[in-house]
Length: 309
Image 1: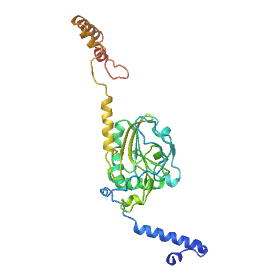
Image 2: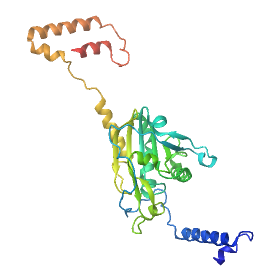
Image 3: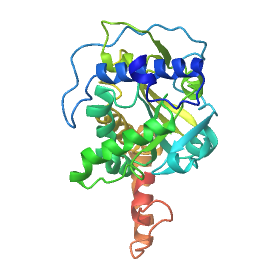
Image 4: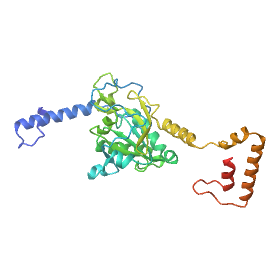
């Protein structure tokens, strides 16, 4: 302690001097032993994090059809942490109550997979998500607003060459430092201290978020994806969620099918079928000169009448 205590003010009591000197020594030791963060664009380490061991009270894991829970959450925008004015929002009322939205959970800021693959995928895919009707893409971790601010700046620096100087407007960063939202969704886990585990996670051991992705439509969960483990990335990637949204869009498009009346007319015999065909011809003839568009559908009146039969 002698080497550190000599820098402390003489007015500090002896007990406080020893305490502060011990703190300074600890901080110095941690700084010397700290691992280097991965460079921008580098591949994450192949070593896996510690096994997920549940050791916290939480709700059952969220499922398709569940209402999205309403939990206070901090929205981290550029500069809000330093000015102490980050908005505190209700997760359901303010963020996910209407429209189509995507929430992505990640184990932690600056962790390898999150930094090198997971978050960049959603940033680069922001335009594609909007084209598929997604109003908000939000990322949540159990970090505080200060660490998320630093992560945002680091990611912006990495992606500045691509014209992405700010994450605001592309993804919303949510700080859930007390894990209230994560536990309400049932996707929390306790990252235990393990010397064999990935070192990046050991500096942030504690309650973390599983790697997950939710599609929320009109306040209700429509899709749930979870990647178990701390470094695996598959079902929750931006590419996987975009593929699900595209498939959902194709499934929701109405297919061109015969009306329910047409098989009935055919079953009744050629007489009624001919009568039906004559009726259609007459109706089409009546509207042959109509060029208007039926409100709300973008379908011509002629096509609408023909589709009836």
